Amino acid sequence: MGRLFIESLASEKVFKCKCCKVDLADYEQIISKDFQGRYGRAYLFGTVVNIFHGPNEDRYLNSGPHVVNDVYCSSCQQMLGWRYEKAYVEDQKYKEGKYILEKERILKEGW
Image (cartoon, rainbow, N blue to C red; front, side):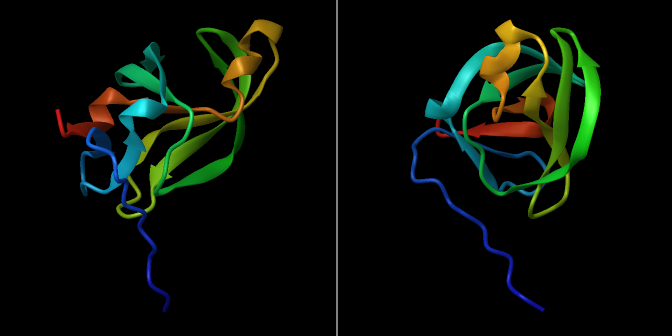
C-alpha cells in the first residue's frame, strides 16, 4: 500500500478541508467570491491542491450548460465542489479548468 502525498501550501492565507484540515487552496488563487454552490455560497479558484476528480457529468447550472467533475478531498474523500471541464456558452468559457469550492465545506486559516 502506497503513502498518500499531501501538498502543503506556504501561503499565510490558506483554505482547508473542513473535515480533515488538509490544505486546499491559496487565497491568491480566488478568481471570484460571487458563486452559488449546492450548499450556498462558493468561491471560484484557479488552482486547488489535494483533491481528486469524479467522472465528467453534464450539468445545467445557473449560468447555463456545462460539463463538470465533482471534486473531493484526497485525504478524507469529502465532496468539496466541482471543476468546470467545458462550458457550452461562449461568455462562460473563462470557467473551463477552474474550481468551485463550497464555503460550507472549507475553512479559512491565517486571517
